[in-house]
Amino acid sequence: MTDQTDTTCGFIALVGAPNAGKSTLLNALVGAKVSIVSRKVQTTRARITAIGIEGRSQLVFVDTPGIFAPRRRLDRAMVAAAWTGAEDADEVVLIVDAERGIDADVRRIIDGLLRGERSAILALNKVDLVKRETLLGLAAELNALLPFKATFMISALKKSGVDDLKRDLAGRMKPGPWLYPEDQLADVPERLLSAEITREKLYDRVHQELPYAIHVETESWEEHRDGSVRIGQVIYVERDSQKAIVLGKGGHSIKHIGSEARRDIGELLGRKVHLALFVKVRENWSEDPERYREMGLDYSP
Image (cartoon, rainbow, N blue to C red; front, side, top):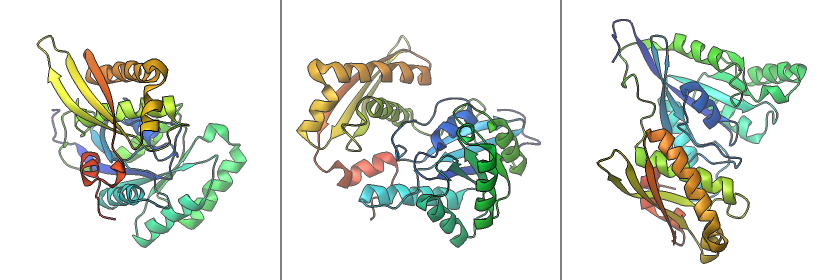
């Protein structure tokens, strides 16, 4: 731990509509991949807590699930987790997809912040895809809906403007000791992070055929004397037809998913990983309270 006579620390919630770029921004702010990124919306399910350092300030980021109009129990649990993250944080950053603009989800989030009397910082993301005059108009319109503490134009993917946002957040943290060791990147069990990486690879591979009926759990974790680790994970689907999609012809898909996941998990852990994937059918897994506990979500409707 660093000498903590003049340090600052605080919690920052990243909120936004699905696919606004929250997870990409979190990874850029931390400087490492701690949250999965996918082309699909509503990819983040659990709240991911990650730690960034800026000078003498420790920034504890909470990447929340996207806030949208929930339809299923899982949707409601994800949205509830997002709002809890915002309520508990010292600062809130609202990420808005500048290309998409102000849609129903963005208005819903702003209304929620207003009801909770929460101030926020605005991060207009994907600004490299939008003309400057459009950006200025969008920023003005958003600030008319909710006066933000500050507005930043960023591209999380290209890391443009991210350093400015990070420095601003560091300046808002309160004096106090750091809550985590200097080299810790996330306050999430490695078992969960590893399962999330595999889920990301699943989305990349079968995102069109298998929308959201996937859940991944790390079932076994064996440490070896040579420093490597053997991980066994179960991929839960809801029907036999979905199992066939995940496996692919001759097992080709599952082999590709396993290879990609093994590489990224190895980079995350900094050691050799032996990964075994199993696919099981569990009907209506999204109605199973145990799966919610695994994701850190509240099962209550």
